[in-house]
Amino acid sequence: MDSTRGRFALSATSSLLLWLAQAPLGLWAFAMVSLVPLIPIVTSKAKFTTQDFLIVWLASSVYWFVSLQGLRHAHPLMILCLFALASYLGIYFPLFIGVCRHALTLRVPLVVSVPVIWVGLEWVRNYLFTGISAAMLGHSLASVPAMIQISDLFGSYGVSFVIASVNIAIFEIIFSIQASDRFQAVKRKEAILSNIFACLCVASTLGYGQYRLNSALGEPLATFALIQRDEAVEYEQNIEREYEIFSNYARQSMLALEQTDQAVDVVVWPESMFTGGLPWMMVDSDLEIPPGFTGTIQEFKSMVADNQGYFRQRAVDVGRILKSANSSGPTPEMIVGCGVVKYGHVPQVFSGIVHLSADSNVVDWYGKNHLVMFGEYVPLLPWIPLLRNLVPPGLGVTAGSGASPLHVGETTVLPCICIETAVERVVVRHLAELKSQERDADVLLTVTNDGWFDDSSVIEHHLRCAQFIAAGTRRPLISSANNGPTAWIDSCGRIVDRLPTGTDGAIIATPLKDSRESLYVAIGDWPARTLGLFCIALMIHYSVNTRAQLRRAKLNSIEVSTE
Image 1 (cartoon, rainbow, N blue to C red):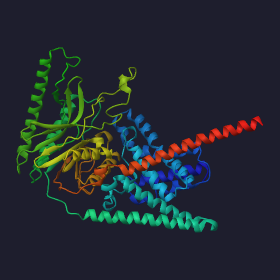
Image 2: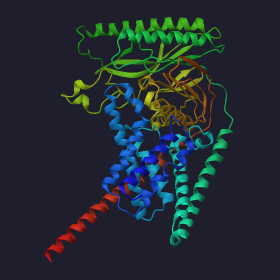
Image 3: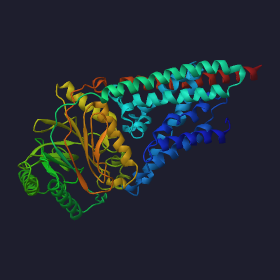
Image 4: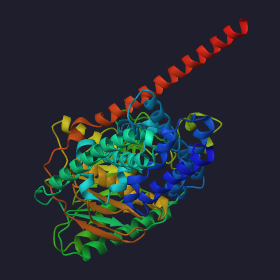
């Protein structure tokens, strides 16, 4: 297997096993052997050439392309972005092999290097180029609750570490059996140590998992109606279509309340579904007249006030419908995905969440902090004159600043939007921010519009990210999504209820309060960060050593030629 063809076969096998373990099939047992085919490349005495690097990168890029292929549905140009994303993520396979090989030259045993380097590189990709947490190795165990409870200690990284440890233990067993008589005793000893370590990891993970799963939860929180429809969306969408979507969600909300005998406290709509061609507008103290407006500042303020009046009247109309449908209780509040425009020194457009009181007043709002690269902004492109016109309509969104909890009665809700649950550190950082201010949240709420991705496995990857965030923060998470995933997830990461992708309906969710503290929220991802910094140090050490060897070789060749 030292040939280029053999190494491609091994890396392709590893990619296939990873794909089987993740969504859409979710055959999690394959994750336990998914890294095994890569280890012979790590331990091979043959040189790992540039050609080998490219071959492994190709197999890995295909895996990422297939796993995230649903992104291509969002816009015709997204196929190019998908190729770029898959090509970038594909680098991590050969990088893992290269760093592990260098660790072996430093006498770091496989039982240490494999899980440490795999998790360290996962940490790197959770930050580099704004970060992405989708399809982490640990996510393959989303359907095994007992194995994911350690997320409140180490995040998804902890589960990935355990899986990588099992992989190296299985490899050591196979290799010790195949080893020659000369090395069999040595390999058998390594296999025993690796298996003891893996068994300890799995046993402690399961033990902690059962302890956490058996913990009692608190009293019921507010009751939420999570609305979902399968509405087709496009980048260039006219106002008539936006209002049609708004009307469809209003009818779906009424139907949801009519079909339940529970008193609903708050109705939740997905990302941007409430906009309906009429975003919520505000003016700031540093208001300047935006380009294109020919009137005075006072006239502009009057225009914004008129907009707010229209917005509120529309909210009143929806509230009246919901009141008549919610016969079991008072008029429910609304938390809705809606565009927000703030006029100041520079106009700012936010992908937002607006909280409407029972009497249809805007109580508060939240602007998405973590924007979608290529979806809501294109790095550098808007500042390059010749390329500025290539930016599709809908881009140029402003990032919000920090956590902004909403209050529904006695329940404190921490909102997030779309990709913010697909980048694990964002929600963890928001909760840590609240803790530092001696505040907290009872429930995490996300609104998203995954109608962009059709019915692809991207939706399932998004849901798994949400499961790990719920378990990692010890807070229930509820999601309202266009097309899916609309789900109610408890504070152990278990799916209490969800709607099938691509259907119209609603979930009536009453999460339970969880007063347990999360070490992950308290200290952040420092354990994984330490491993990531260790990987970076190894890469720097390799680079410095390689350059030193090249210089020595060059000097030796000069000396030989002079002689």
